[in-house]
Image (cartoon, rainbow, N blue to C red; front, side, top):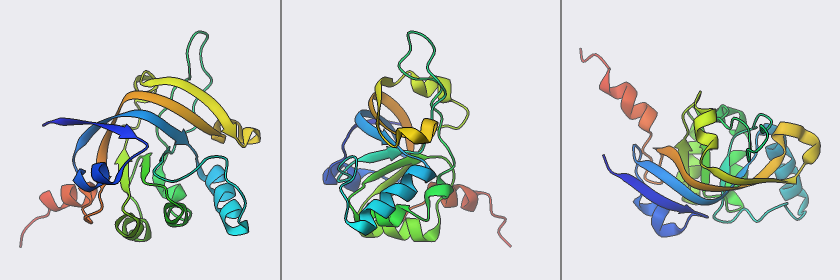
Length: 185
């Protein structure tokens, strides 16, 4: 299987060519945000306030890192469960977000929003946070520092490994996997 090298921020051409099941290595800038940060982002959008970063074409990684060891950019940086962001994700995609990275399946409302807003959902390997942290070359808190590990961070990544789960064509790798093992009557 070919591994695709892609850049973040994402562009329309890249998003169009990605298919559920594709393995990718992401290089560029991504942001971290978990449910508490998502709640604040949506509240700010609803009030018409300026956001801490421009969502357009960006990718958000659902992650809260552990503290960095001396000499390291970041601590363990594994994904958190994406379903916790499902309430907020459609609203944030409507504001321009194009990529999400986490673990686990997404709700039908999020899958519909991925198609509508031409976005993509990637999975990172749960339990591989120490390995994933090696692809993070720089990390800085840019907003909501009071949230601690859940603060929004700007990450510069190189060859960040992920798999496309939901694409703009409506495919869902998790559903495809389950279908392979259905017993035919």
